Image (tube, rainbow, N blue to C red):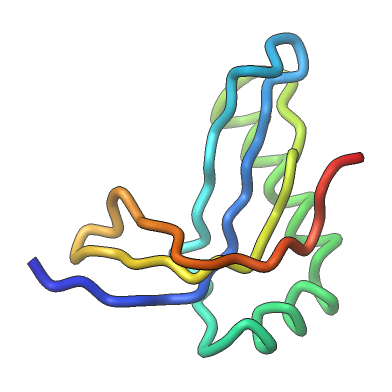
Length: 96
């Protein structure tokens, strides 16, 4: 199995009514060459990105989900983009 390293967005959602229930989302469609490019993209489009994540969460989970945090993450991935291993990350948004 071939593995590679990529920088993507990683979002952790939590269920508002059961905060221990969490889901991770990975932005396989958007990859970056480095953290600076990822951060720049977030600074320009972060509001649209987060709104899109919330729309997806409503459709996908049919629960009241909120974003716990969103980061630019360096991940090791296999050919199928399954079970990524987070090597490093830079948090762009975190709930207070």
